[in-house]
Length: 505
Image 1: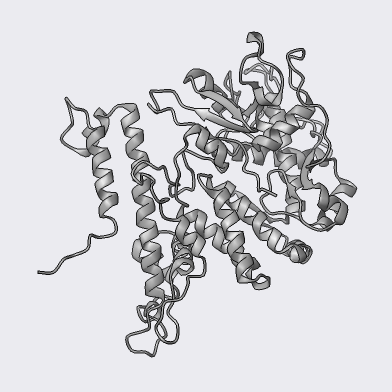
Image 2: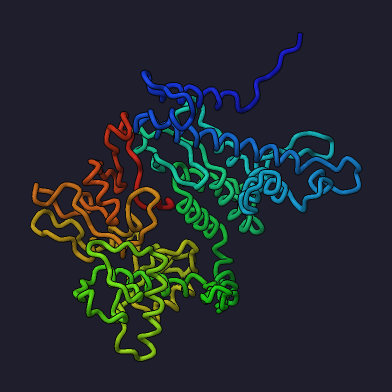
């Protein structure tokens, strides 16, 4: 009698089945999936979604391992190189994309992770260490953790529970989570770009740092951290990279068959800084500007969206992408000397952060608010020569930022410090920049809450309403904001990390 090992997804499937059965309504479970979901309470259906994320993660990790194994298999005929090419695919990423019927980028990410975590065989058939062992270990749940309840990053790279600070995480009881496949693909891609000048030991240490900061983080934060780690490895090559990016800048204008015109620009970080900051400033100014035009007499040129139709009362529903298009048009209309522009150009401030050593030695890198790609000291000096800059010098002297209760409103210096801490709206995964947010007293000023950083947080209007309307609570520990959901969303009220992830020195 032969024994069969369980398939790698058996435990995950059993965990999902347990969560699904526990989420069903005890009195009216329902006969079909749609009816069963309809009868689940709010917390139960969210728990099912979390468990689906764990299932998706397990499937993608296994897919990466399978793809990595297939990529190393030789062609059966021994003439076409590998099994992938013999099967008619240009590379493993294309194989996954076509067999799974997903986007090429999705297949490429799974294949890239597979190549990074698969152990190749040496000349004598012995197993060698995989290229990124730390990434391979981080993709699996931590030893001793409950894999069925740990909230892993989903396909989009977002997570519902986050921390990268061990002490704060332990204090708040945040569960550990494995690294997402998308996050692993970003880390591997960035570190491979720096691998040509690094030793294997340096590369392994860098991957460990990136993984430590990427735990629980939304994908956009993982991308930013991975770029910073890569830049630290490649500090001597930062200036040449800046020059290559500037030479690669392009702007194309193409009229589409629909009658619309496609404007596409590929800009280096120092150029993109002005564009992004300028558009965000114009959008914020237009959004907050009161409009008093009468619907029957309003001039179409004065309508905020340029449509000629009166805007509805209350908050505008214009999407952000459309607002950027309007702001871009108004910029050039203003430059053309039109006196009927909807708004005057708003002064633009570019915030650049760097550490004190980089400022003194000229070695290292700086980052621009809203831009993931770091810049070198040369680009920093060029920006300083012709821009309205606010330098965010880290580990250096700063102004007094805690004012107690004597002042009602947060000062400009405090808002800049909050922007540095929170990176915009502090809600986990929210991408609204600081110009779209307002400083909010966690404990209301009218109830004795002080106007200082520990009692302040940046929130966009949507998440500001969530705090008040749905009764979320906020706490700040060691400079890190945490959002605590109401009991009807999470009975355990597990704190969720917010704010910007910072790369440790």
